[in-house]
Amino acid sequence: MSEFILDIEQIRKSARSQMEKGAITQNYQADRHAILKILDTALATEWICVLRYTQHAKSAQGLHAEPIAKHFAEHAKQEEGHANQLADRIKQLGGKPDLDPASFGRRSHTHYVECESLVDMIKENLIAERIAVDAYSAAIRFIGTTDPTTRRILESILEVEEEHADELADLLAAFDPREPIN
Ligand SMILES: [Fe+2]
Ligand SMILES: [Fe+2]
Image 1: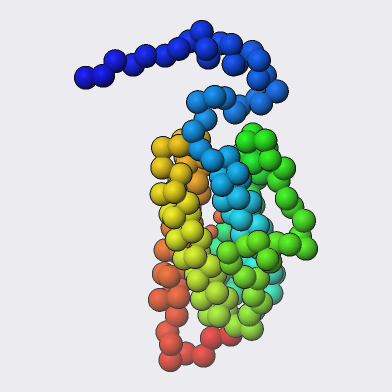
Image 2: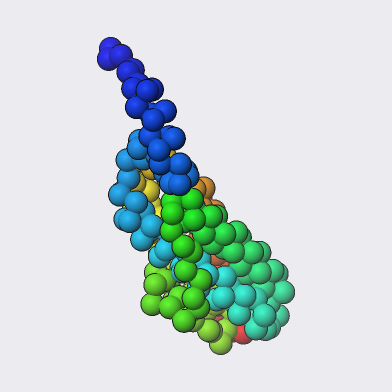
């Protein structure tokens, strides 16, 4: 078994001499710029999801609209929570959260799509959730053990996106394809 050796004198020295770096210490092992890029893309993606879900929640119409609109509104709230978690982590890593709405569409993994029917809304959001699940999974694999805090944040978000995708798949399956849906 190998022994755990810590050069505590060196750690104390660098803690004091690089105080301005805040949470970033000499043992931070990730490529900070690569992590910030991942977080920036995720931030824009979450905001596009907030906007798409909110638009769908407000414009859903038809016999089955109310409970589904409630799901959309609830998801929008959770996506906003994710966006805030990501923005906090960007700041901790010495970056600046970019909330310029003009570039959300370009930076996001998912698209802002308005739909005419409830079933199309469910499909569009399900596709977006599946994209988010895949992108977060890939980011988590890339981070590995280099940045445990960012990894944990992304893992907790991934878990919720998987729940969203599962719920939407259930909603989609609940529709009888023979009945017209508005
Ligand atoms: Fe999210
Ligand atoms: Fe989601």
